Length: 280
Image (tube, rainbow, N blue to C red; front, side):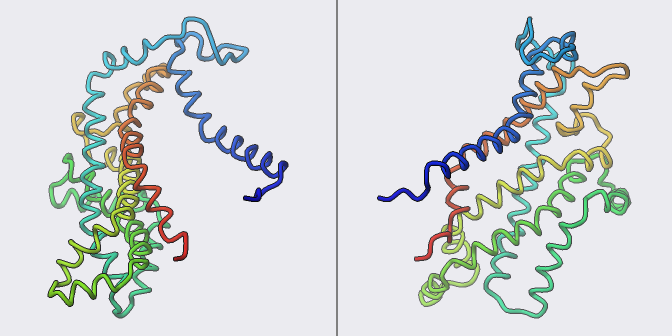
């Protein structure tokens, strides 16, 4: 087998990857190092990457200074999970309809879905607040779940539709010959085949919902026990100073649920992203 690249091309490729990974991983490495430093050495001059008396004390003391930290993490995971489930209940049938049915203004609707993603959620904060207030939904989980679900649906429809288009229609036609209906075909034929794509959409929705909870919770909720992690992290900000080492420790612990989900479903994510890349 002939080498595809010359030696200097390999050097350039790996050098580019090294630079890319450095910029991507550097914030996480710095956050971890900060979580190990004592507060007295965080702003030492000159800057030292490794200092004396580094320890994991912040990972223990953060639970004492913010007793509800575990609840904030649970709330974030719960809200993101519910948003993902509710989003999929809308995304799957909608993406199937857009990939299989011909109806008026189909392309226009798809364009509107993309247009929705061009606007930040902050633009709709005041209308959403008045809507939640009118229906008595403020200070509830639903006040954070509803807008989160609405914002993950458009992107999810686009992603899953592009995957469903690649599924041969002959699979559905064979099921119809055997007497299956549309819903049965979707549930028993299309969804199992499209599982890698559905997993990719689920991960995207989960990460989006997990990351966008701050503005909704800060606006629609004033009950401390219902706050998600992004709002809970604000308790490490004092009037005079910020407990940076505990804040970094809590932030790193807070991203573990997303990391575990990603690692656990990694093989499905790779299968979904590479599906259709090779022409049969």
